[in-house]
Picture 1 (cartoon, rainbow, N blue to C red):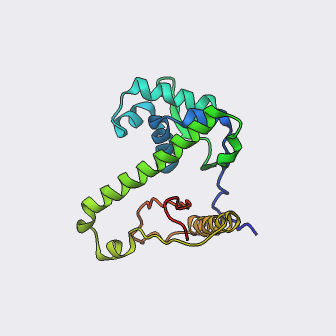
Picture 2: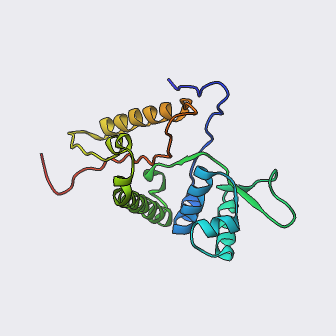
Length: 199
């Protein structure tokens, strides 16, 4: 059963990526642009270029590439004749790697996107570890990583992933108290078969 978001909170807009969108996303700056627009909201190419330490020309070009495949769109409520504001067209995106079994280019793009997620996880962890000693005991106790090896078949791994996703969506949809010590928290869910050992 799908849970509904709290009253007043809109249902998240989700897109199931097609092969063209996946191929377009397989670029480091495009992934970062889309991520920034999703997390921080609408922005101009200039603001995004400053935030992501790139130049406005490259940022504008890659935003247009994302717009061509429907992943970002201009924000007409903020734009002026001199400034174009961009926003993410969706709150979340998903795909099944098997969707692209018959498309070698899209399959290669999916592998790059998944490898980039691993790089982002490593980068986020390193950045946190470099500054965690400045954070409160509550944050230091709550943040972290763990791992566990389970004997699963594909169906049970899929069920586990679906269950975890349902929990994450429940937390996403819960209202947060205004006085709470809230920070954006980057969560990663991954499950891969161990290839170097046998049970």
